[in-house]
Length: 638
Image (cartoon, rainbow, N blue to C red):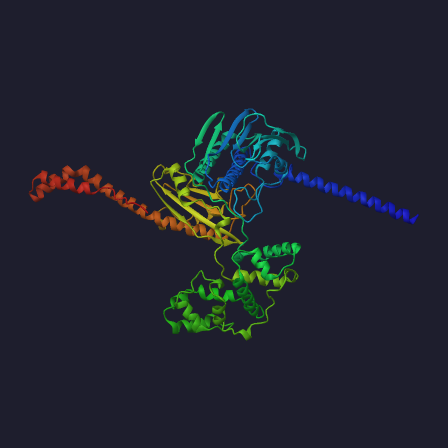
């Protein structure tokens, strides 16, 4: 009897668990579809923004598809140039309800018939690879399709064809009732592209208010991608930006993260992932999971970890002491007086003994500056700086044969390994994973559309942040057809991974960095504001897994490294632009002098002729010659 009772209880518990699991699974399904728009800011919360967000998500996907088609063509034919085209069609279906029909069609790589269901059921379309991508980290077209289904009750339609498929295929999916339902999957009998995809949705949105931003988005996409034709059809009326170049954006390749700025949490995740696959040696883990680490890098890292451990045991960090010396204004003042510098260093660094004479030599040679950190010194320089002999260093807790599991089981080892990676100097990260716009393409794309009088261009060398490479490009355009009364969001064109950002302007790190610059130095405005002259700055940031403020991907999040790179690029472009602005000011001054002389030449000639007792015509001829010299002096910029 007791046994039966226990069996009955166990059975009821099993049923309860199954019901609980079913509820949890049901919750997950709802979260991936119906609740998605409620949980996060996808950009579809306002009727005035929803049409723009749908266009932005769809066009990003289409541009990625075209680049994948370019990659396939390059591998198969040796050329990636073809008549790439993206067409956006918007028509008002019901004005009383603000219902729109949106279709985005491209001649990109296409979606294989077997993969359509996977894509439409996904909660997001982002990539987890370490490479730059327009559509990374977002919910993409899925969010647009969900919003459309919720707002109109009408399904998503997809028509697609790949290079290898003989015929296009049509799919219809509904996102209602908390799940994704396939309504149709069939061969598409009508005429379609040789390869590409067309997606159509019906949605509620205030197109009249969204229109300006959609037009600007398409215009900026065309400027960034002159190798693609962009067409916007509004109720049948077409606005077209034809293809203007055959040079496309380099196809990014996934690469491992850079070791310089990996944090403890990221390192622990990487160790755990490797552990689940197989626990390998530390040397193998470092070379396999990070770029720019070879045999020499592993050996240097083992010695560097022993040096840091020496300071750990004394509750000190060598990097703090080095920064203190490097950032001291007094040290820089005394760098040409070795004896006084040594005396001052003895008062500046007292908690640990250093080689004061050697430190003074490094300062005098310019090795130390305000931006220096521990990475500037190799192991031998570091040991000499702190007067460390091999005997003084503790036994290393790492060897080349230390396994991943041995490190993962000790938080102190994880921390030490992360600090060691950050403390060393490795070569700059490879640019393979980035998608910088080629210089000529970047300049030509914007200059041909915005038609400035002058422009300057700056591209920063790649650096790294959070273990990932980052690169910044800045184009400054001045005068010409650029109006004087631009709004702030038009003076600063923000671009992230080849995609223009139009919303959340004030929250973006690009905007905040630009406003921190003292523009008066460059004759462009003042600090705390954007430039006041007819000037446009285009700032492009590219990085794998770029940090956005939300899944709508309209603002780049705060990052010190990215902010510094943006600031340096803006300042460099502004210095070049200042030359032209100064010439414009001189030209204006000469023009005013000329206008004054022209206006009063007759009177001045008559007065001077009487004073000098010279014929009036002779004086007037001299004045006329002087007036002709007072012409504008705007020079050419390089």
